[in-house]
Length: 208
Image (cartoon, rainbow, N blue to C red):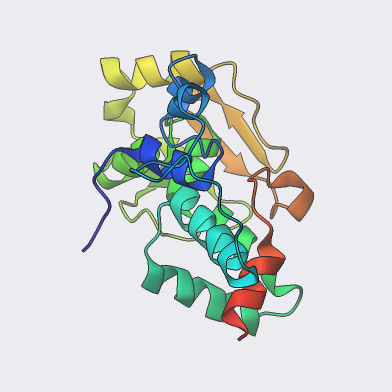
């Protein structure tokens, strides 16, 4: 499967804001957006006014990059969000938030979504006691997500927990880091999803 493997800080600079793709580094002075607050490339420092389409495209690209999904996956999510009852844009963000890799990240079992995806893929995570290694797996309210017993003593996992211990856990999750597990209490509302994306622009883009 195609996957972007270049420097992720370049993606943040392209969008002109922090997407927190490198975890804790994004909160330090080493963040590329703070050091070079302009788009990458030879003409990155040139001023350019975006068209209506350009603004819509940038919002879509931001959402894709934050959650680490590909274009085909994103279109599939949008089609399902549009099919469900409710507001399409909010449905889309809720579906992306309920991905297993994102929930693992939100619980503090990964310093970034990329690392959380790796934790899932490497068979360190269980859902309701059963091993799940599919990052896109959609969790549901009541599901209990835990780090596998044999993985809890690993030095790498301990370092992750220590680093993310001070992270604010969303209200729709209940996490116990001492037990290496958490529970999805309810579906998140739009107000509880803190990503810097205007989902209405994404809806306008795909509705053309």
